[in-house]
Length: 314
Image 1 (tube, rainbow, N blue to C red):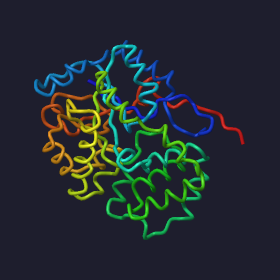
Image 2: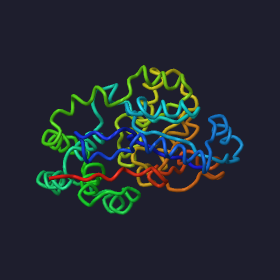
Image 3: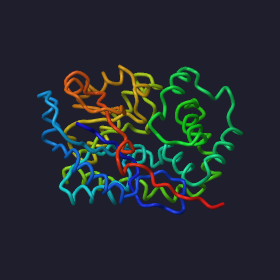
Image 4: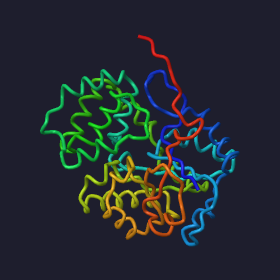
């Protein structure tokens, strides 16, 4: 059984020429490809597998970040085929009315030449801003499955992993003011609306937690991790009603992004399963022995899952 991870599924936007998204046409082609090569696992069979330990054959589709394009483009494509998906929603956009920092980074890198962004970032960095605790680990294990140029990789690593959380938001504020000063105008149509979250669950989709504000969970203490998990679930349950099954996925993913304590908190919360990012199939041992760290492929590991190549002028 293969779990597949998606983020942005949308048409090309010329205002953000460097933005990395899966074109909706390629998403549809990839669904056709999965149907012909593997088939899809039903929701009932997937949930039952955690009790039985028998692994159904086929594909499970997951979508991260609670993005509007999931409602506008991905949902109709699934419904047209009679498919279901798991949609993982971070809750800060609703509880605080703020865009999540990782998405502001995506807008910055999508709007401008990554080299210019990287060079601007370097002018703001100081050695005391770098969190040294996990620096070597994060250099080794982050972004290994993404196709990033060196400037994009540098920006993502500094802003998402290397910078102390004490300084991170301020640096992103400075960059977005430089490169996307109108980003607040995009906020209104960037995320799912609460009514859309409920509509999707009522239509047979599964809604799961993706924390409050998308932190690297391994950088938080247990109390902070617990708050990210419990507060996000509380909002989603208030918005959509009872969540069945209860499920979570780790921001960023990879074993470097969470801890044994994270898994313990999720198990205590009653999560049936949680998704990691690990490029392999789900096996019986995963379902029975470590359901809070299920492996999951990025869609770009399969045919039609790559960002379309574009030519830039100037």
